[in-house]
Image 1 (tube, rainbow, N blue to C red):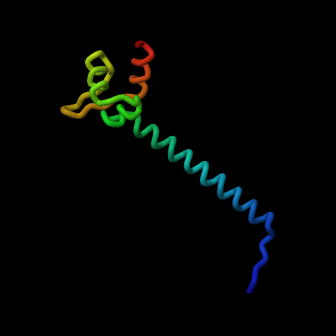
Image 2: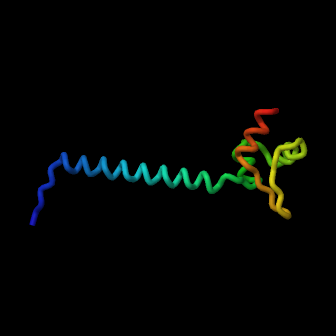
Image 3: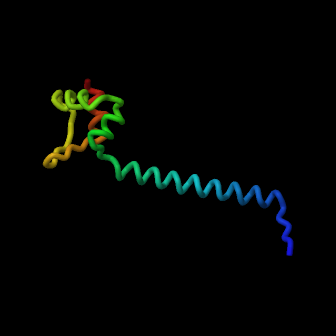
Length: 86
């Protein structure tokens, strides 16, 4: 049995699917951004496009960080605030 589907209907379905995928992807990215608000040292270096030595120097100069034992985390908000004051 052959089923004929009009070209216009196919285009509408493609657009609908495209919109759904975009919306779901944006939701995922928004959620992912908020859950990864705190960065480790490597992520912070990548975020700022600096070396680990520069990051260590900035920490000594007062870059805000959160230390729990040997673990160090950085808040993007605090990083940006600190950079604006420099």
